[in-house]
Amino acid sequence: MKARQQEMPGDQHPKARVLLGLWIFSIFTLFIIYLGSNEDGSVSITNITHKFYRYKPLLLPSEAPSLSLSPTPSPSSMPNTQKKTHCRDELEEALAGASTETNTVIITVANKAYTEGDKPMLDIFLDAFWLGEDTRPLKEHLLIVAVDQTAYERCLFLKLHCYKLQTEGVEFDGGEKLFMSEDFINMMWRRTLFLGDVLKRGYNFIFTDMDILWLRNPFPQLTIDKSLDLQISVDRFNGDQWSDNNPINTGFYMIRSNNNTIALYDEWYAEKDKSAGKKEQDVLYDLMRNGAFTRLGLRVRFLDTMFFSGFCQNSRDVMEVSTVHANCCRSIKAKVTDLMKVLHDWKKFKAYTDDDDMWEFQWSDHTACRDSWNTDAMTL
Image 1 (cartoon, one colour):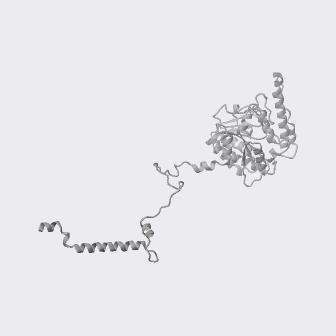
Image 2 (spheres, helix red, strand yellow):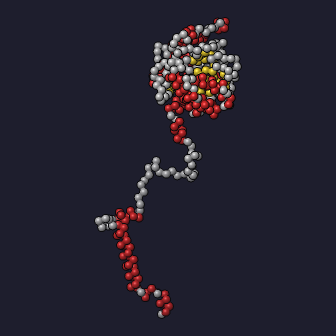
Image 3 (cartoon, helix red, strand yellow):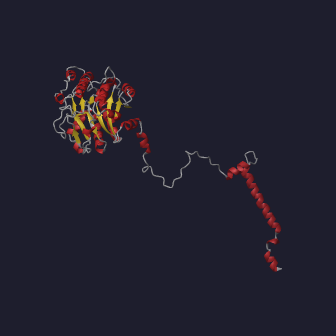
C-alpha cells in the first residue's frame, strides 16, 4: 500500500488541482479581455492581435534597404558622386561634345558685334576653317562661348558646339565694346575665369580669338613637344622661342590641364582686383616678367610668327603659316576689311600652279587696321 501511495502522490488532493486550474484560467481570461477592450467597454479581436503583432508597412523597391556584404563606406571614402553630378552641367556637356580623344578643345568667344552684319566676324572665322589646309575636321572640336543671347542664338543656328556664358552683373548685349573700357576689361577677366574653370575640369584647350584665321591645322606645330605646359602667341617674335622677353598675346595659345597651369590661372585671376584699369593680357605679362612661370615650374614656349602670325608681324613664309591674327587693330570694321584681304590672298596662293609664283607671294597691306589708329573708336 505504501508503494502505491508513493507512485500516486497527487491523487490525495484532486479538488485542489481543479481549483488551481480554474483560478489560472480566470486570470488569463481577464487579461485577454483587458487587452481587447475599447474605450466604450466592448471587446475587439483586432485590438488583441495589434497588441501582439505591430504592422510594418511594405517598402517600395526604391525605399527597401539594399543587401550588401561590404561595410558602409564613410563619407570621405565614398566616390564623389555629388561632384560628378554637379560637373556634368551644361558646360561639361558642351566640353565633352567638342573635345578630342585627348580631352582637347578649341575655344573661342563670341558676342553680338561678332555675329551680326553683312559679313560678321564669325562667318569669316568659319570661312578659314573651310578654306584652310586640313582644318575642316577641326570645326568638330570648336566650342563657341557666347557672352550674349544674340551670339548664342547665331551659334545654335549654325549647328556648332555652343555654350552660353552667364555673367552676373555684366551686360554684354550692347554689341561692340570699346577697347580698354570697363565692359571690355570685365569681359576679358570673365573670360579668364571661365578658361580657368575649363582647366580645372581636366580639359586641355587651344584658345583662339575670333579675329584669327586658321589657314592650316596648327596641331602638328603644337604637339611636337608634349611636355610643354603653355604655348602662347606673340605680337612680334624676338627669335628665341624660350625667351620671356617676347611680347605675349593672349589671343591664341595652347595650354595643358595640370596642377601648374591651374595654379597659374588662380594666381592670374587673383590679380584682377589689384590691377584696376589693366586688361588681363598685361597682368599675365607682368606675372611672367616677375618670374611666375619659373616659380610655378611651367614649361612655356613662345610661338614664332612665321607659323602663328598677325598684323603686327606678317609671317615670313606663306607655305608654313598656320594662323593670321588681326592684332594691332582697333575696330571690328577694320579687322573685317583686312581679314577679307587675307582670305583673298590665301585663295590666290592656293590657286598658284607655278613654284615661282609661290615664292613671289606677298601679303596685302593691312591698310584698314593701320588707319584705324587714326580714329577715336578703340574697339575690340
